[in-house]
Image 1: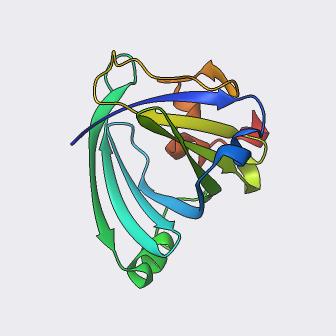
Image 2 (image 1 turned 45 degrees about the vertical axis):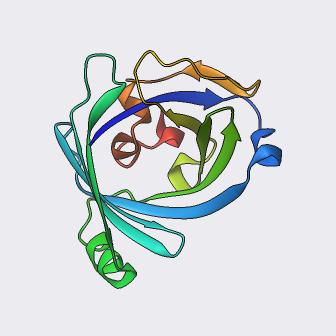
Length: 155
């Protein structure tokens, strides 16, 4: 239940040519306290409730619990969420032994593209594609819970 991931800005849209899958995501937050965020997400034809704990010092690892719920429940829960629903398309790009998840944001976060890679160990070595830019792991401005409160277009 510990999630280990690193986040990077994306420097071009070349990743779209390498994507094997893309999915529309709508998500909101019932709670954005950094010690315990609670997210409601509709991802394609599925829906989830997710609880995330506070990250470690580097921001690479944190507790994560997720449970699938039905879409009607998710739609009702989204109505209870804090202001600032996130809309994005997630692209999945396999590279070596990993899959990058690249999120292209819309709405008030339009123009922001972030790549995430999940790892088995914080020090795990992984391939970096040419379109991968600056690492922003641990920079809370790029957490979806924070983007819902202070959107990218307002920076």
